Amino acid sequence: MEFDNDQHFVSRCPFCSAEYDLDGAKVIGEEEDSTMVYVSCQDCESSIVAIVAMSGLGIVSLGLVTDMTEEDAKRMMDSEELTGDDLLSAYELLKDSESSVTGLTRSSKP
Image 1: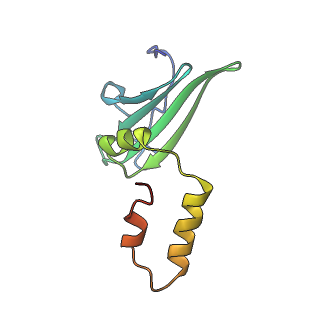
Image 2: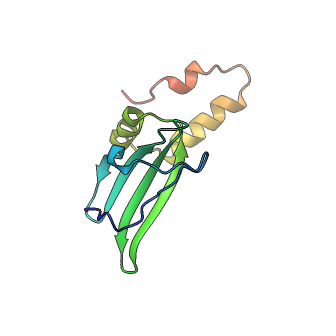
Image 3: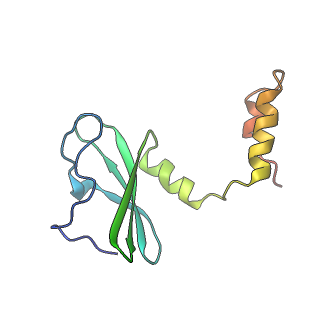
């Protein structure tokens, strides 16, 4: 998927309203009809991850404010999906007041 300069992407920072320098946008993932992009504001240093996709209705985009770095976002793209069992395990650990945060970081998979 390629972007034309005439197409309007997420153009302004949601925090400080500064215009993004889209030359600094980094593609962190691509599929057939969609692209995930990481963009940082040069003024306030906040970041967004945006998904831009082609649909039957045209180009659709969705941006998410994040505190992740570009490297974090790439690592998350390569990680396994969470299952319902993963969420239930995290809930059980948090519910038990004697459990520690280290229990959440231990891998349950060999």
